Image (tube, rainbow, N blue to C red):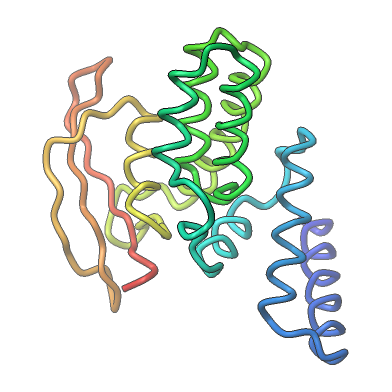
Amino acid sequence: MAARLVVLAMLLIVATAKAQAGFAPQEQDSARYVELRSRIAAGDTTVDFTELRVIAARRPSPLGIGSSPAEHLALARDAPDSLVARAHVDSVIWLYFGHVRAHVDAKRIFEERHDTTRSLSEAAIVRGFIASIGANGGLTATTAMPVVSIDEEYAYLAAHHVHREMQALSKCGTGKCDVLTGVEESTGQIVTYYFLLTWQ
C-alpha cells in the first residue's frame, strides 16, 4: 500500500512538472498512453488498466484512420495465412489498445487461427481490463462499476459467463447506471450488475 502511494505521488509530481513546463494535457495523456501500451505489449500486465481505459476514452476516435475495426477483423478471418491475419489484427489492437473490445476480438481470432502464444497474450490483457472494470464489485447501485463504454459492460458479462437477459437505465447517486440482469451459465443463477456511465 505504501509503495502504491509513493508511485501515485511520483506520478503526480511528474504530471505537475510537465504541466509547469508547458506540456498540454493532451500531450501528457498521449505520452502516458504510449508508455502504458508499450509496457502491456511487452507482457507487463501489472500496469494500471484503469488509467489506460480513462486515457483511451479521452483520446480522439481513430475511426477516421484507415479501415474500421470490423473491416480489419473480417479480413483477418478471411486471410489465407496467419501472417496476414496477424497484421490485420495488430492494426486494430494498435489503434484501439485501450479498448477491451479490440483485445476480446483479437483473442477470438487468434484462437480460431490456433495461435496459442498470441491468444494467451490477449487473454492476459483482457483479464487486466476485466479486473479493472470490476474493481468495485457492481452488485449494488452504491458499488456500481465505472465504465467508459457499453463494450466494457458486455465484456464483463462475457468474462463471467453471464447471458444478458435485461438491460435498463437507472440512477446511481448523482449519476446514471446501466443495470444488466442475466443468467450465469454454470449455475443458472440470476445476477444483476450495475455499471456507472462515466460519459453521462
